[in-house]
Length: 339
Image (tube, rainbow, N blue to C red; front, side, top):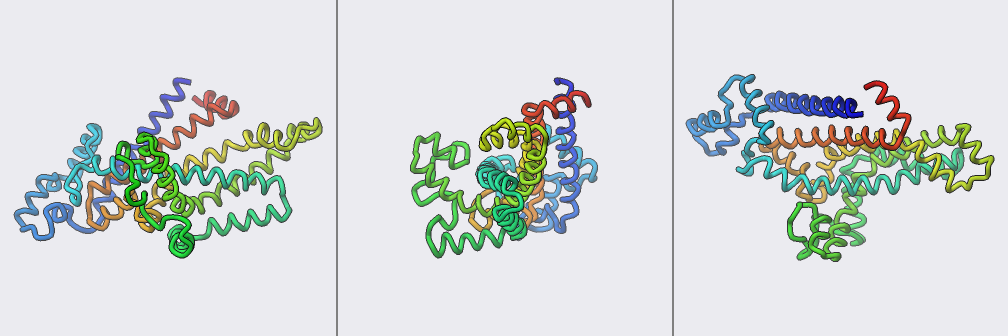
């Protein structure tokens, strides 16, 4: 087991190095001059040259790359030319906002998509199955930004059921400790702020979860259909096991493996897709930060933001692998044999 863990962690570190390398060389293809951005719009040629020397942009590309990797090992992501402070400091502010949104989206996705997928499998070929499949297709085909705008217009602007934007109402922002308003509200012991933060998260989480719910519904449905057709399920039905217990204790755990893998991958994808939702709902998260960094040609901010996104994706994959090993003896046996 320890050998497998070391091998898996090694692959994760190799993946992070690959992401860092890919992102570094891709930023060199972005049009514009990072030194000019760092020096300011009204900078003279001499000031731009000083900025280029200070940032190390006058060195050969390989030297810049090695310097960048060395700084990464020290936890230094460079300085943002836009905010004039370390990128790591910026990310400590914006990343909790996006992670909170992604976690809320994951909760909504699981609570809605898994029961719908089970329902479609149990009612296979009937009206409920057809309706669920139609809803899944619509959810997967609707662009996230358009759905976010429609939800904002209908439920917030017209009906006033939910807040139209932001992360908290006026005077309801908790003292900043972690940057995640839900956690900070709990730490402050303010249930009213917790409810306000959750209420502000509802609409963005619904909009962001729509395409991911469609994938999970279809996956749960197909895997549950396969499990419900197995001999041991037929044997349990013949013994008179109640349907609810059959689904929750026998069928659903057996079908959870592939769904867990998809949810782990979706965690990383949601970080990227959050850019559109954060822009619509005026949330100061990682997506908004990256958008501004690209617009301002802020090279180190782009590098740091994309690297963090890739690292979260890799870590999510590692956690899912470990969870599958823990809950499924078949996966555990296959991984241990391969190691």
